[in-house]
Amino acid sequence: MQAALLSALKMLKRQDLTIQEVKTRLECKFESSLVNQTILFLTENRLLDDLRYARNVIERNEGRRAIGDQALKDKLESRGVPAEVIHDLMLDCDQDELNRALILIESKFSGSNSPGRVARFLFSRGFSEDTIETILERVSVD
Image (cartoon, rainbow, N blue to C red; front, side, top):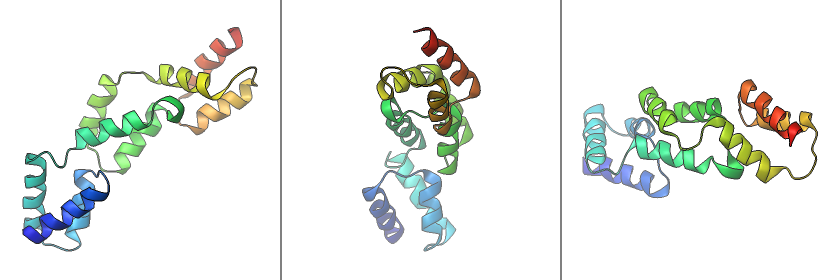
């Protein structure tokens, strides 16, 4: 188990990973019982935590780097974060999608910009159509 643990710690030293990512990488080198023991040890000692990982991803994707709810969910799901963790975090998120979009537009666009340009930009960041329409209404009124 020491070899598996050492390998996992080397992975986590370089970057924060999800339980699924560590498990997948360890399964290439070690048998599943060792992998499961290693994952259990890492989670019990809080060295591996999907909730912490997901919170960090959400924090990194705010402000000028903001992305829409669906893009955020897709990013977390692709990294192996369990659906219930994603759902709980999205409910507890400090900023809803509309507020993230408003902050993003205020920081990214100054002066007059065409609504089409704003809409394309928000769409490319994974914001929903409803959010984009609301932003366009607010920006055109301002």
